Length: 158
Figure 1 (cartoon, helix red, strand yellow):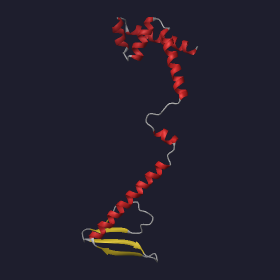
Figure 2 (cartoon, helix red, strand yellow):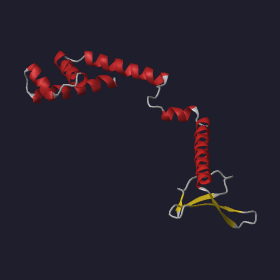
Figure 3 (cartoon, helix red, strand yellow):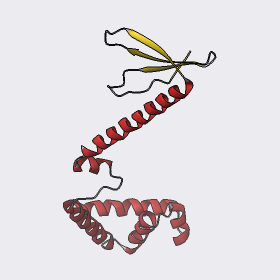
Figure 4 (tube, one colour):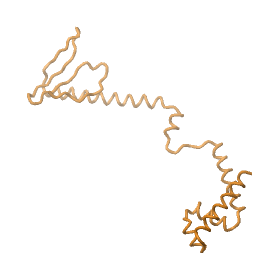
């Protein structure tokens, strides 16, 4: 006996389809008015039509569920699902102020520190590339970057 795959059914769908392929026998099982299980033999064509109906019914149930889900989505849930979330005006303004403060603090650094900070953090150069660019040791680059970062922190705390 081959039963159809277990499918979610509408509450008003009282029957269950069964298929005995080796014997070419097709059955519909349901409970009658007294609650007793009844089995009726049906033709293959009727079986296929009822199977198609079950699939269409399942499709409608899924579409309905998706519609209900969408109708209950509110702005907050949509914002949580958004890929690129929109920033609030306050966060944009504070971000702009922070960037401006960092820019001013970098401008106030000595030229060697300023150039190496820009190369390392903004142009993505490695310490070795910076050392080759200025013909200095990697240790000197590390020292310059550490000193520059300390000065930036001090200036930004003010």
